[in-house]
Image 1 (cartoon, one colour):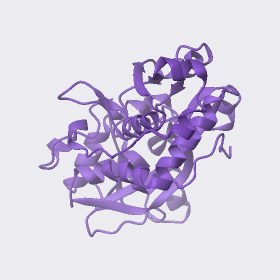
Image 2 (cartoon, one colour):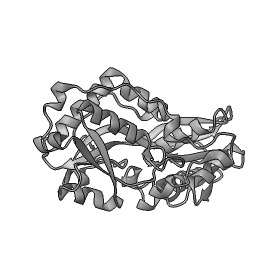
Image 3 (cartoon, rainbow, N blue to C red):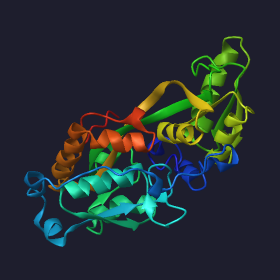
Length: 302
């Protein structure tokens, strides 16, 4: 689900399907796919001064109704053993709910229906690796909590420069922004400079792209930054990041426009950032490269 509008906002919605069987790297290493039960939880307690600011109807209900679309591993997906929705986003939202003295109640929905359902009052908030952009801010407010972009990976110790990969074989998932835009543009620049083109190797599933890199069938892989980070975590010491994250944009939780819930969620996640729990949750899922230190509302730049 890479373009569920994370890059999912800049690529094709089809990219979103990255996650389903995506990064089950069992086929490419000895690691098995992480389940939610494998991830250490953090200690979070209610903060009365923040919880007191909740809208009355949400406070009295005792729950935060969260619209979510799965899978998009490692952010939100179903645990293969328990069937529960788990992931980085889930652990963070659960922690925010605890700060507010609430229980997060996850409701699955088609990605495209989440924001309209928030507008209709069916959900209080959305949680599906939404990219906060100006277009979306016209219909919803976004509480920003993460920064995602594109990230390359390489085999351990075999350096590849994402800005000078002419002649290299680079794995991508088919129909992602990396497949349709990034690699073709970089390859075109190589040819224009009289250098060999980048040999793009496209796979239907992200797990196959990661597998190809682990086995040395390609020189590098490009994917959304949390997806790449999770692949690296799953593959142990076989692959590593190549270069920095680029083309970054904020992930945000959408709420109804002008809702008093937005500043409460912002204060709650900022509390977790300041207290260190947010960083720990990001590290648990191997996505700490996209962690931010300050949450804002509607922080899109474009």
